[in-house]
Image 1: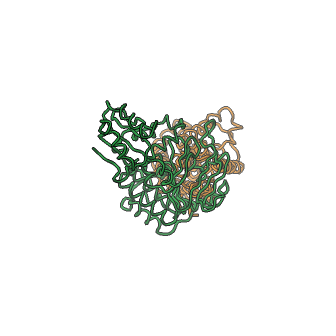
Image 2: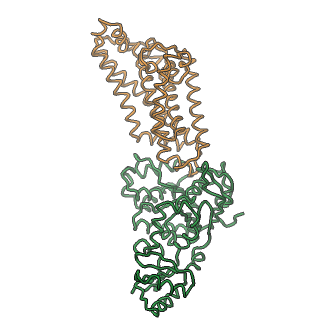
Image 3: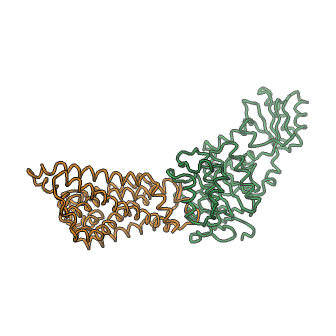
Length: 272
Length: 342
């Protein structure tokens, strides 16, 4: 517990926490305001414009917002996980803990648990801010917000957010594992980004395989009618797993990432 | 195998790929002493420190920490060990206090109030709220020493602890470590700075090319290592050398040709004999120093260590032997009253 609380305290103080979250919120707000300001006009002339209006049309906007956060947030969560894990090696702080007799795998897993909590908090806060921005954008687009109080959608939000948390946690766990294997913050982030975009690119050629890969599976855990932001690829024709199967696949990736992290750290020769 | 020892290694071996770092290291560190672990760069000091803290694992050999075996599954043994290995490791965006709190959450439990006491002890209380990224190297080093002491360890392992410290900081650190040893703790200090070790350590271990080449109480080791240095005019070096060789045949070495320093292994009490012999030959020394010479012993013992002979850092220190002055004096302090400046 001491280690978990210390992990939270470190993350709360860490600039990367706010930079990552700020970037996500900034992009989210930018896109939604842009959509709100232009979608009404675009909707009269193109199908894309009409689809964009869906982003700010409630109650469907709830799940699209979540899908959007998962698409973009998945990349940020991976970078965040990689940054935290990599810095433990780069700064030698893992070394210091191990030299004090701390269990290597326990240290890593509790560090990740702290990341998981921060990601969860980040998701809820981002969703809340996103909701406000979406309402503002709806106002700009002249779309009525009568669907905002749709009881069925609001009732499903806790489950959707929980699923989203797992999806972002999976991305963070993979970033964490990659940076641990690379023993470096920069290498971890670099490889993490390459994996993310590599997966999106591979979807063009290997859709049946890619649907099981971490980011596509993560985006499938939240069933949405639209495709905005899905897999970060936005609009590509992607074969998706059904949400429940995706949940199992995402959990497997998350657990796999943590097992790799724990095993590698236990066996690693720590120097530098 | 190791009664009364705080730390012991037997046949410790470690390889990094094709490079052998340790080839059967046998250390015996008594309890309650400051143990100086000397060696040139690349001799295996840091590898030993990493092995002693479980950061890496030996290819062969055994380690005992505080009288009990220390292997892969014995991390709890480190609860009684404090370590500063290589450079101090901290989160740059956290303050000194937050870093210590964060570290205290890992491994051995830390007593309430300990962090404040340590910040006071290392002189960082005033800056304890500042981010570590704003600290100088010396301040980080002091914080590293505080971190090593967090759990009030019985055994303290410090790798080059004076790195980056200013002279006052070095003196304070030396006194702190001596005080800790006097209170029954064992302090294991790795260094390649001979003067520091000579002033600090009770027991000495010299490692070269991955093996222990000398170990024992420092006075005992240096007892037979008396040395006198004589400075003459460069034009008189050959003649002076012949005179000195007449006292102890074949042992005089030219320490610094430019400055005219000659060196010979001889007890400090015979400084007057040396001076007289030179004067009788019409050679008048412009400088004469005596002292137990850890540097000479060190150079002799580590002569076969290729790593040492090719790396600049230690050679810089060794070079100081040949040029008595600001660097050389603290390294080989002349015996009180034994030196004559003419």
